[in-house]
Length: 264
Image (cartoon, rainbow, N blue to C red; front, side):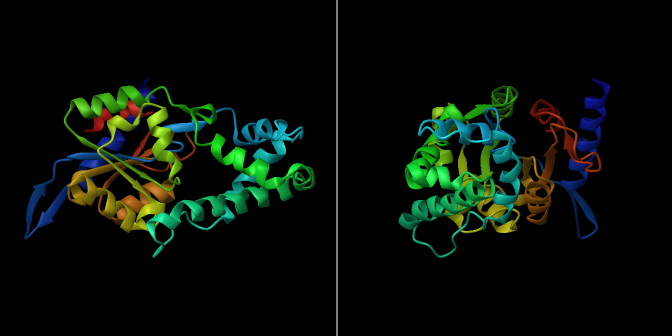
């Protein structure tokens, strides 16, 4: 308990430092008016693990997959994929581009895990189609226990709420199915705005959609690079959600979303 209080105190001190601005030798304080959240790893997580979900879909086709091998290979496959952003693409072309990006990633992972021959034998595209659709449903995801109480508390205090994510367009229907969509005033997706986190422009787009200046917004996410560095570069206050205690050196760090409301 004391550790959580200490984290919250350090994060609050850091946020206050961010929202105090000097102008013409005068000090002005900008009140936070909106809170933005990341999606995967912040609000939702994969049920079990990615490997177990991929293996479960493979079993529908009579293919036994090594879930541990898929889990081991997924981070590298994900990192090697291009950003989920398609600058200049027509809006009606984006869903197919998102799908193609994920197909290439899943194909690469299947080859790395030694699963490609078995999936080819039953039809790789049939497998991918079911996998892609599966991850658009609550069957593949769960909401962290602290999410709904936090969103309710943030809304009760009058803040506008936004989502800033590199997730593809399936997140919209997923939020609806998980009964989270009503909490959000604006959804900012990298594939829709043409730039992905940590690019500062996605955060600029998010605060514009929320109708607040960057200095009046707080962004909460689980990535030091994509969320903290990106939002800070765009002029937002930042909080790193460090559920597993992996980033003790980040001052703007909390261990749960419940600590966020104490900072506002």
